[in-house]
Length: 208
Image 1 (tube, rainbow, N blue to C red):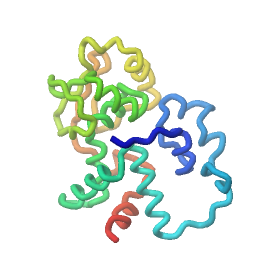
Image 2 (image 1 turned 180 degrees about the vertical axis):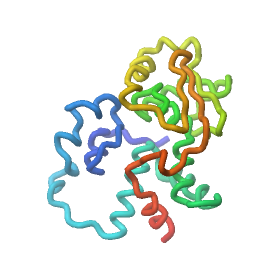
Image 3 (image 1 turned 135 degrees about the vertical axis):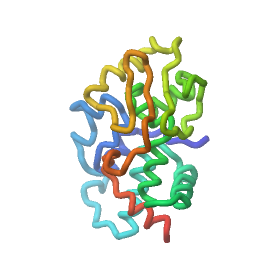
Image 4 (image 1 turned 180 degrees about the horizontal axis):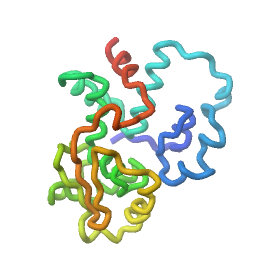
């Protein structure tokens, strides 16, 4: 399976905003965006104005990298969102937020989505009491996500939970920190997701 193996901080600099790909480092003075808030490369500070297509492409790349997806999978989510009733852009973001790896990150069991994906792959989590190791598993309202009992002493999970007060837990999720458990209460609204993205540009990109 193809995956990005380069520097995550370079991705954030390319999008000129924090995508929170490095966990705690993104909240510290070491954050690359804080130190050099311009695209990487020799001509990073001298890039010209983007065309309409360029703006759409950059927005697509931003969201794709934020959730750590490859192009084929990303486009599959968009096609599914387009088939659903309602606003395509909002449906698209809801599908991404419903992923198990994203929910693990949002609940605070991991410091980044990459780390959450790895923890899910390594069988650290249960969904409704059953072991699920598929990061793309889509949760539904009422689903319970919990850390397996023999994994509750894993250092990275406990360190991530300590940072929950700083990051917060979204309104559509409920965290029971003492029992290492979270509930996917309801489908998130666009206002609740509060993502710094313009999903309509992605809709326009794929509608060409």
